[in-house]
Amino acid sequence: MEFNHIQDWTKHNSMIINLGKTKEIISYNPRAIPSLTPLPIFGIEQVSSAKLLGVHIQGNFSCDMHFKHIITVSSQRLHILKALRRQGLSLELLHCVFHASL
Image 1 (cartoon, rainbow, N blue to C red):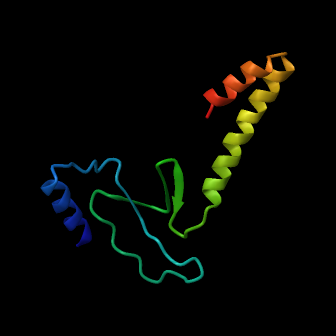
Image 2: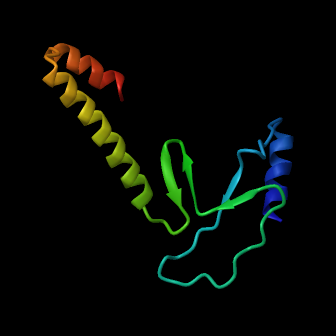
């Protein structure tokens, strides 16, 4: 089993797998209907999507979830900047708020 090889590698390299945070994503071709899904690994949750280093990854290789997240966050930040500008905040301070929110 592939996960056993990963566990052996981590032990050999003095690392520990945090099983509470470990997820398994089953990737498949979105045009093909997945006929056989692998059995779940004991103690590992199977998910259809996960966030890795700030990027939402989906098992069907779609970017919809990531794009939706980016658009939502951008819209919220733009709303805050517009509200602060209406309140008379100077351009220099708006730049500070913008850079602090990134």
